[in-house]
Structure formats: structure tokens, C-alpha cells
Image 1: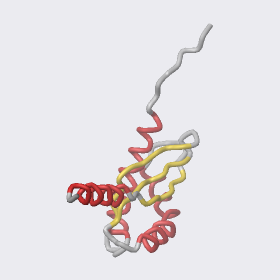
Image 2: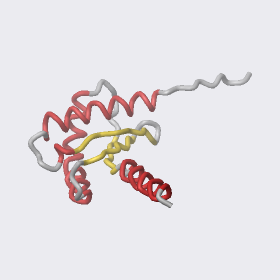
Image 3: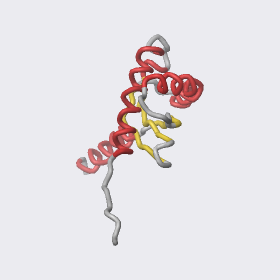
Image 4: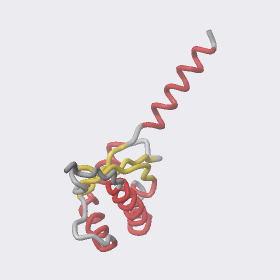
Amino acid sequence: MARKQINSNRGDRIAAKVQTLVAEILRDNYGEDEIVSGVSLVGAVAHGGLQFVRLFYYSRNTDTAAVQKRLDAITKSVRFELAAHMNQKYVPDIRFEYDDTLERAQRIDQILDGLGDR
């Protein structure tokens, strides 16, 4: 007998929940931090059987290396807070990754505008 395939979006739901909760944690616990206060979470992807979530962020701060370093430093405490807010047996590991989509879109727009001048 063939197994019935189930198209589950559980990973997407978990990733979205983690993104929302981490955004609230960053806002509530690190709102006074100059570096972290400029961070906006723009997406999340679950991996590894929901044991790992990559959180994509954009920052108004132009020093992305400093922002990444600060986020890496607070990841453990953010995950601890996340565990207190999640209603699951296991809390996924989280990793912050810079999302440069906005800069790439601006560069493409500049290139396209330059082509129109010819």
C-alpha cells in the first residue's frame, strides 16, 4: 500500500512564530541598545527537521559587521527568552543572517536607470 504524502507547512509556521517572538524579544529587551534597535527581521526559514531557524534581518546601521557581532553575542539569551515564550518541547537553534535584498534591488534600479539614459 502506498503511503499518503502530506504536504505540511509546519516548518513555515514554526519559522514565522520564531520570527515574531524574536522580534518582540529584541524590541522589549534590547530596545535601548543602539545597534539592535535598528534591526528589523524580514524573514525566517526552518531547517534540519525544525531544529534550526535562520532569521534574516535588515539594519538601518551601515556597519553590518558590528550589527552581526552584536546579534551573535545576544543569540544565547534571545534563545533562552524564546524558550520561555514557545509552547514546544524543543526550541530551535537560531542564527541571524543579514539580508541584502534591498541593496541589491537599489543597485539593479540604478543600473536600469543608467540604461535609460543611453
